[in-house]
Image 1 (cartoon, rainbow, N blue to C red):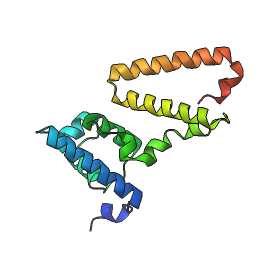
Image 2 (image 1 turned 90 degrees about the horizontal axis):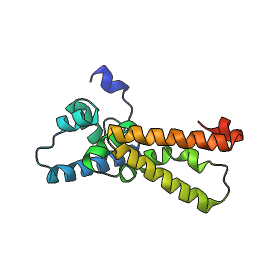
Image 3 (image 1 turned 180 degrees about the vertical axis):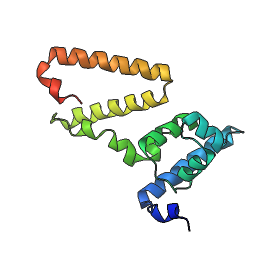
Image 4 (image 1 turned 30 degrees about the horizontal axis):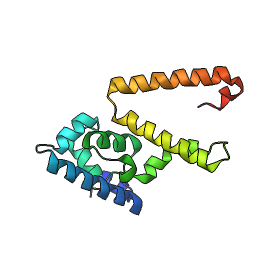
Length: 153
């Protein structure tokens, strides 16, 4: 056994389940897109080599947000369905909001999740436009409510 394999931690049951869901989504994509390969997916997603993609699909490496969204973008899969754990992690600040009305929180959380999904599915130009819009909204919000300026991340 190599030194690298000795240092690698065992994936949690949840991480293993995510890998199974990702692998199933990949297999479905390949059925509909003849010629799709792990090498191709590694190149277009920015993950790197076929080997790295294979390690995520086989559950050797745990998914992270960047890999999850990069792969899902290219295989038309839902990041929320592949990894509810990671998808929830990006929404925690919204759910910890000072707003007390749970229905408002849930509606805001749903809109935020949709925005994140649209952002990751967009082209690079689309992502830049979304960021510019967010900056304009942030500027307008802080101009309107200067006391909130320190609360923005």
